Every structure is written in C-alpha cells, then in structure tokens.
Length: 414
Image (cartoon, rainbow, N blue to C red; front, side, top):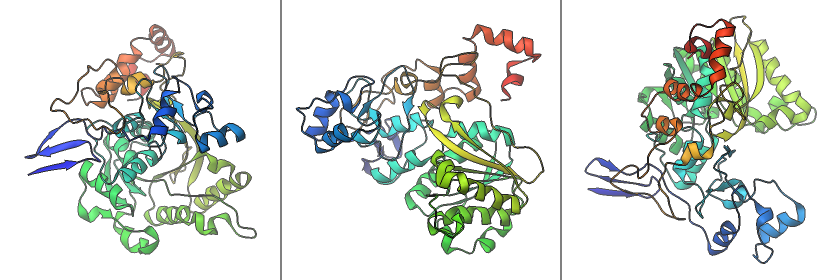
C-alpha cells in the first residue's frame, strides 16, 4: 500500500524508500515571492523596494530591524542561526542563495549537522520546531569528547541532536524524557531505544525520584530545559514558575548523581537580571557538590555550517576542573580549516521551487563536491571529513611537529 507523506518529502511504497528525506520547501504567497525575488545574495530587508507593499516590511524600515530579517544566504559563508521559524521569510536569513525560495527542511537539518538519513516526523510546524530547537550533533560530539561517557540520560531530549552527537563517540543512551509527542516519534524512529527507557510525559507531572532511581550514577546527564530567566522581586530567580524546568533539571542531577552533567540554553541567559540568574544556577549545583563552568560556544567552530551561539553549563562531581573543547575550525582558516560554508552544506542538494518537495527514485541528482556533503550522506566518517580539510593546510603539519605531537589523531584527540 502506498503512503504519501508530504511533511517528510518522501514516498513509501512496498517498504521501499525513494527520494531525499524531508527535502521540502515551504510555499510562498505572491507577495512573499515578490519580496524574495528582490533580495540579492547576502541581502536583507534593506534591499526590498518601497513599491512592494508589505505592512511588516514598512514597519521594519521605519523602526529598524536585524540585518538577518528577510535575509538571503551567501554561498561563501555559513548560515546564521536556524531557528524554529525558518519557514518564514521575514524571521531570519533563510532565503536560498540562488533559488527564489526558502531553504527546505532537509537544508535546515544540514545546517544543524543532522545527516541525511536522520528523518524528522510530525507536522511541518513540529518538524521546524524540532530542527530549530536541536543541539547540533557535531557540536554535541565535540563536547562529548571531553567527557567520553559510556552512558547518558537525555532530559528534554527533543529530536535527539545532543544524543546523536554522543552516540557518534560511542556513548549509549539509558533514558530519554520529553513531553513533545512528535519529537519523541522522531527520536524513537532514529535511535535504538527501548520503550522502557522512554518517558513521554511532562517532567512536572511525574515522580522523578521514583522514575529515575534505577539510573543512578550514570556517567552523564544532558538537557536543555526551556527557561526565560525573568526576575520576580523578592524571590529567588529559580522560584519563578517560568524557570522551574531548570530547577527540575537540577533536581534530576541531584537524584541521579551523574559523574558529569551538561545543560544547554540560549546565550541571552547570561545577561538575565545582570547575570544573577546564572550565578544562582551555579550555586544550586555547588550545593549538591558539582564544580560548574559556563561558556558560550559557537557551533561553526566545530564544523557546523551555522553561526549559532549557545551557552553550556558543564559540571562534575569528581573534583576536577571543567574544560570546553578547543575550536576545530576558524573563520579565516588560520591554522585550522575554514568554517564550513553554505555551498559545502547544501550545494549538492537538488533544486526545488517554492512549495515543492523532492521525490525521485534516484536519491541525488548532483555529485558531492565537499567532504561535509560526503559526511552528511554517510559516505565517510567525521575523522575522514575533517582530515580531508586538514590536509589542505600545509602549515598544520609544521605546527603539530613543533608542538611535539607524533600524529594528527593525537593533536585533534579524535
């Protein structure tokens, strides 16, 4: 029996799969198409002619706005942050560099470093949310290499970007928790996870002590609890109901007693209430005997073709200092490979028109011309992808020899 799944951009027929998963471009209204056509590569709302009558554009022109609004990507640069609204032309820099359309779901996933065999499930809105909220797997991989956990628990797991990065380095997930049914559907269809290791419930509605007790002393607990970080006069910031999920995450760490934990959030959290919120979070972890360090990381530094900043709290109860991964890429290629740009990220994917989905019996119509594309297609490993780029940097070998390292693998701690 044939099942046509529009949101996934693929045909299922007699259990055979044809096409590229999720390569679907959002529809554009006539007005949106006029706007998109008026914007050159690297351009934005400032390039939209005044004779295009759009209330929103006129408001931005009067009041000002981010340079990423109505932005068109450039082939020679990484993407800007892929948020949950990359189906909307005015909410960021999501217009394809050449084609008059917004980037597809698969292209958004590529910018987040999800490989092509990772399939997203649910409504279109749900899929955009899953991709935009995810921790890029390649960034998660880089952080995980510092800890090298054998096992972990993923709280607020979403589609599983963090889990995927950790699985790439050999870690095994012991338990996932999320109350988003579509995110759970995506997770269980992409990972080998037993039903007994899934809690698809609101963390506020379960007995966390009872549900988590069998997983005590796990190597690592990860999670990105939603948080607004607003202040209530006269109250501890963590007592604000809008911040309670962070408090639940801390409680879970207290119950599970992992060797390490990693908590991820938006970088604006550092500035909430003049930094008091972050200090309060650190104090709460200190109370349960965890050394904690906080740092904003840029995903592009670790191979993700996206200028995405996120703050990470990393803690351990082993009385050891906490470190963060050194960058593997550089914006100008100084002693490291260049950032992965838009051409490398999506240049091999078949062309689409606005509102079109790619369904062909051959998976790809174009060759993979960059190691990142080969990596996304599952043709090479991360190490092979990275080494292909490192080999192009002649000075790298001299630097490694001077530092006393005997092999590239030793230097980059793969």
